[in-house]
Length: 323
Image 1 (cartoon, rainbow, N blue to C red):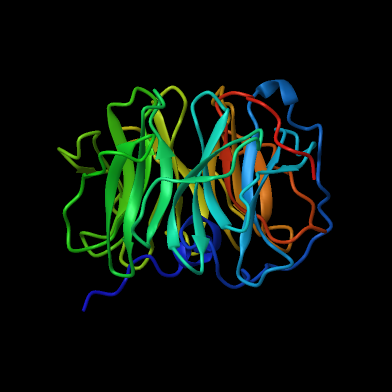
Image 2 (cartoon, rainbow, N blue to C red):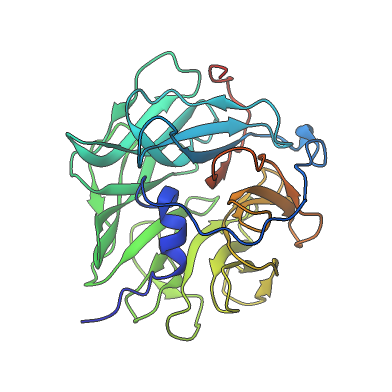
């Protein structure tokens, strides 16, 4: 049987990006690096959603939202669900996420960011994860399946007309739509190691972009707002780090070089910054850096629970309820 190539990097990220539950990430040695609100100008635009454990419910998570400088923390209203893998609608007014409950398993939900309505479940199977909204807001791509077999699907934003895009006896997951809506980047273990692929939005013409050695997974692809680059997480250097490449797979560059976890990149609306999860300051928290890897700054406090799976909105949208 083929070894699941997702281990170890995606297992570290999975607490928020894939499963919505799990154990704590092993921290790297604690440093005195403080949070640095104000380093990133709030006028950069958008807001950053991320995931933290629910202190009152074991193995449950919730979605929090901050401004680009780390200030103004608020919570997404998700009821009693364990929520993970947040994905903003293009206009910033709604959030898709994977929600889990004991009764109905894990599925894709949407809710208004302002919290006026309860979350609405879009998918009925018990293991749908990792949603991503199309740029026109009309569709949502997501992962269906678990363990050693999953596929990329797409459905209308109201949950209707689900269509399977990939057909492999392996793991295909973590779809990320290109800004022009014509292509989808995703992670696949179809060739024995988790690598980054791109396919047309209808599932045709998949192309492998990364080619790393076995057991060094490349995961969590994220298109830049101009569609010219893709950031992703790779274990190829021995630690999970953030990398970036041109959209055709050329011009690869390592952006982070810190001990421990750096994973789950997401772009600012102007493409000048990347937010990501990092354990460089102790427990895993949300950090941001310039798109060339310079000027790293922590956005969430080390006094908070571990934080994962950041998602930067393209627009501001309404404010959710305050904590």
